[in-house]
Length: 492
Ligand code: CLF
Ligand code: SF4
Image (cartoon, rainbow, N blue to C red; front, side, top):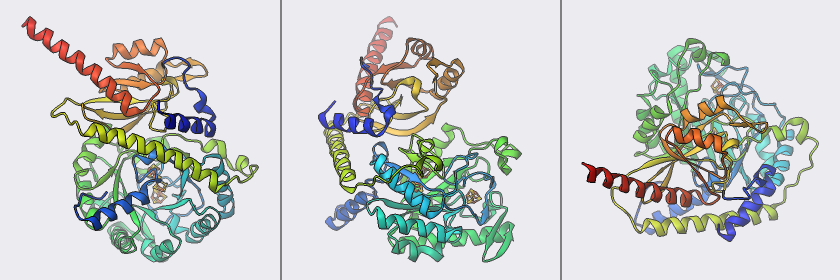
């Protein structure tokens, strides 16, 4: 491990007590050639460099947090139950503790000290932020004033967006998400039963038309105001799955920066219309196929974790329970700009090293090498650094002789519970790891290792950069393939 990587790993360990479990043993927007356009690309890169949702690279290092200050909503989505948080940016069935803007600002200043890699404050619920404009904007004002290096981010269904773009711009909110599930109101009638607009409730297609027009108007206004817009779309098989390629085309033409196609999560116990009527969500394979189909058009987000309206931490981790209202109100704000900048500079250095290593490798391109999938257990930092038994998700990389490319993540039930391995959890894990040739972990016990082997998945222990470990495993896998092929050829 390089000295900078080590420094970062130590800093992360300080910020997260859990990270001390390192093993003692082994383990833009298109290309252009003109210099003006290049500098435009560079500027965009700078704007997203510390935003874990807008930059796949940043999500290994930087964290976001949400504050739940916005309870009301102005539309009804068939995948939402109002007892829970807005499902446009969170997993259904999750309830956040509602905060006042002042409590929210206190929480942000506490967390900015405890987790200095937290760079983005998002408001994403529990209802729609723009159905609660005063609470939302008051929160942003307080934070912009006291913690100026924290980026402000907002997620909305878009109904009231055109009314607030000027205010959003004025507050320097540079990232806005709109959830757009259709551009054809007929499709929308199967998703939205009603829309409440300007003191009146509109049912059926009348309401959906208003929503669609307002979403398009909001998207255009964001583009004109030069605010980076991400579009979230919920993929609902049989309802909008085939239509989302059209959505992708339209939003791109209207200036969206990034498209995040998320799977519908639907279960009867969530009490949503779709949950109760048995509407299924897409399989990981269906989701990947649609993301692949649309990714030719624009940047495609594949690392979304459908987090909570009070999420805290790196995207793959949930530290919200460390900062419940009862707990954070007792903590003193520790916001320290200097310390935060120090850590960000260290992260930047690590990222530069990782980029340089990647660029050097990219120069020696190998044509037509086979691709394989590997699953990685990580706590962030771009490292293989998590114990198999502690993983609640695996990041999946597609690896060939040239690169290891992040293609998605798979959630699993934690295998190690209270010091013992759970057999049921292992069965579920094996299903979720289907199609992967290996799992890259910092440590794994002999029992799960054996079970993985029986399922044709090799366990690789390491503590180093993901790309490096994946590439070394790939070379080993490839040489075994070549040997096997030549033995088979000599026998035939
Ligand atoms: Fe939050 Fe959303 Fe801002 Fe990110 S989340 S408001 S853009 S700071 Fe990110 Fe969470 Fe996915 Fe949202 S992983 S659900 S995309
Ligand atoms: Fe629920 Fe969000 Fe839809 Fe409102 S916009 S109904 S809170 S999912």
